[in-house]
Length: 151
Image 1: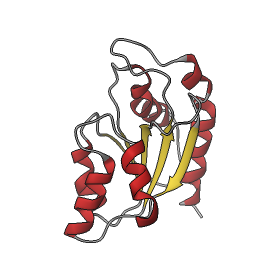
Image 2 (image 1 turned 120 degrees about the vertical axis):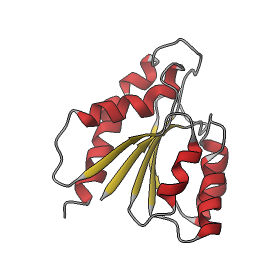
Image 3 (image 1 turned 180 degrees about the vertical axis):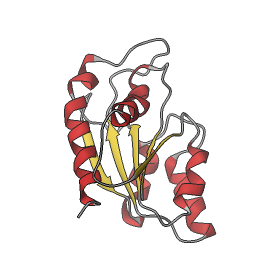
């Protein structure tokens, strides 16, 4: 079963895009069973899931040095974990730290990341217009990823 996990603070502007997209997914029906998990701002919650063997799709605001709202989807491998370490996390532990910790403890689940470049991550702010404009693209990529498990 595919696990879709969002990271983000719902009260911190564009950092709320992960939980926002997860709520949008809850409203849809899919051709395969999926598990939706809101990990909030605690990347440490990912450890158990990373140590499993079920595929993961992680949704998060990601500072990647791109234009605000840019959506990037990529599969995580040892080769790109260092760039992920710098790009993903406004949270206590970085995703890269959790990925390496899981690897030290055993095999790591296959993992895809959907990152959305933020414009602002201020407390008490809503999603920026730039990020809102790219929600349809993010939803399309999420649905495509889910549909791959139906075949």
